[in-house]
Length: 204
Image (cartoon, rainbow, N blue to C red; front, side):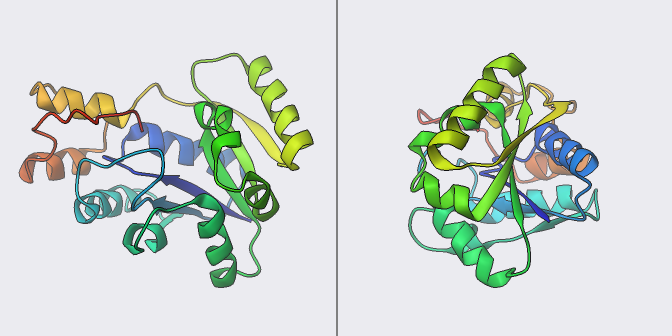
């Protein structure tokens, strides 16, 4: 079984690392693929894909069970999970994929492109943040009935950290040491990233 943790990683932060740690421990996964988005349908990136990839490489070096796949990052056009999973099946034909998401993402699964295809290509592991597990269990049941999505709710709680909050702190020249790996912080500072405000800032 191969775990997949996707996102814009703009920048990657300790919340992402915590999600990977929870999934590795609870699911006993040998590896997790970090899958940075290129042009995702619901989000836009502030840093370039090259900067985001460099920061991801720094973070991935902290755990030898993490590796990076750049399929979405360098392909042209909008990246949809259904199409990506289909492509990854050719690359990893003998793997069963388990897609790792925060509980906020599972609420929006019905808006994903071809949710039934996604459900046929992977199972999902959900990590709670700031909500009741009972609520998520109900949603998981609904998605299984409607799309056949196989989902497991993990026991570990995700950290309340968002990339958009980190970007705002950087605009305000505030310290982000408690929110990102030290190497990522050093990279952001040395490359003077996220210093300009953008009207399209959104949570990722």
